Figure 1 (cartoon, rainbow, N blue to C red):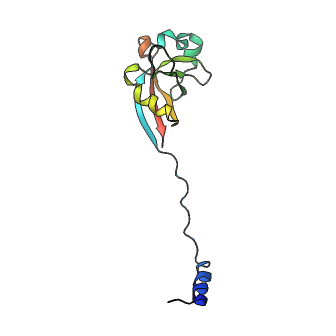
Figure 2: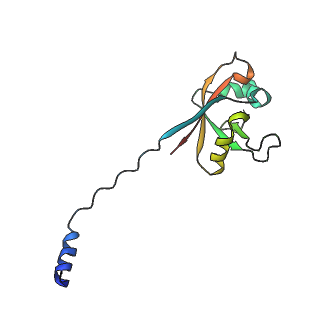
Figure 3: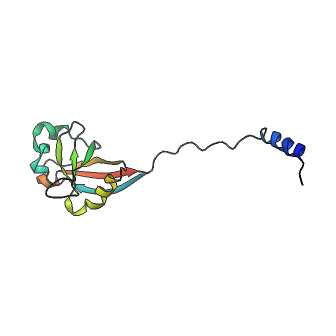
Length: 132
């Protein structure tokens, strides 16, 4: 059995042992969720020449949930940083991204490709991703 004096000697020596260095915070890992064309692009502000000319490959878009949307309770609007509504994530695949956004997980979108000669519903391809 260790005595009181020996215990405090060991305890005092423990202060001299350097602590293991902490790992630096690692940068978030990016997980791509999906790549899609913007649904309803032809019905929103992206079709105006002024807004369309501002769209750039790699440009970040804002994702905004619209749970009160009368046509789709899982609707996710896609907007420019300036607040111009471009359209929506397609209804057929927006359930999981909507649930992720509803949980407060930071989810982002960026423009992958712009094709001014494509039909309006295929003009802008976006990638939706999150950091973990």
